Length: 113
Length: 117
Image 1 (spheres, rainbow over the protein chains, first blue to last red):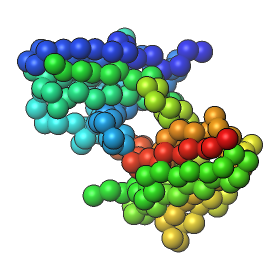
Image 2: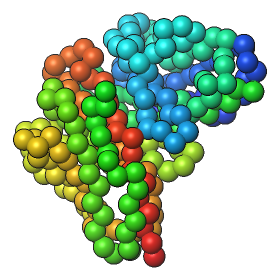
Image 3: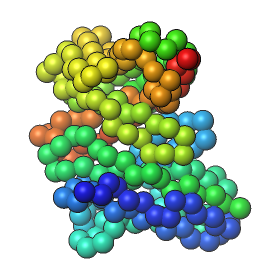
């Protein structure tokens, strides 16, 4: 059973471009979280999704950021018109419906130049 | 408003001794607590968890203690090994049965544990 898969592992974007981060949850997991880790800081919650449904996006910046978890395919975190401050490690985690333990992917390290 | 606090940014311990990592929380709606371990450039790895109906959970060298009245939990590692050197995150959540956004995991800022040979 493969773990949570994130791709790409590293992503470099110029200011103003779009960044798309993908997350394939563990098999059978229907819930996905996205977290961001800035240098020297902890894990900041961004968004919590169920398939085809956003449950909590209270940690997501109001502009430029969006997330989806379609019925088929991976969850996508999209950042439009990236700025240098978006440079961070973005982690995805998944869990089963009635489980509380969430399992993390290896992360995508976004660098905005 | 930091709902989960790890007040020690770092801890250094001698190999073979006990490591004690502490965590405090403020939200009384939390009733499930987890510890994750993270190496540089990797994702966090789930270590151990505890439900609020318990005060202790043990798994090998790792034991988590929960003091609900004090809103405090701790992770004990005995004996500590150099391979345990990593950042340890405490996280808290509502129970699955509550539904909705209570499932969200709220993390502390982490404690860097260094185990010296």
